[in-house]
Length: 70
Image 1 (cartoon, rainbow, N blue to C red):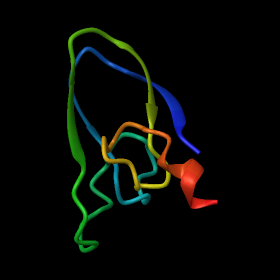
Image 2 (spheres, one colour):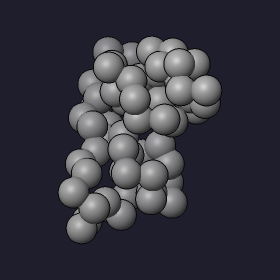
Image 3 (cartoon, one colour):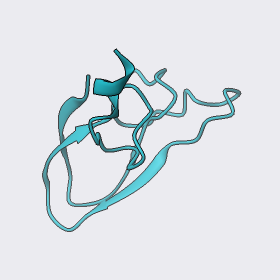
């Protein structure tokens, strides 16, 4: 399921490895996983549905792909 989060205006890095203790924001825990965080630039702060299954074609944002994984 996606996580509904508030992202700040400007640049932020969204965790795609699932290890961040500050999820969905990257804290560097991906080192050694082969996965990299996704840079997101928001024109203004707002809520977003961040993908939790990592199958989204619009990663890091949810596109409903988790519905087809059931």
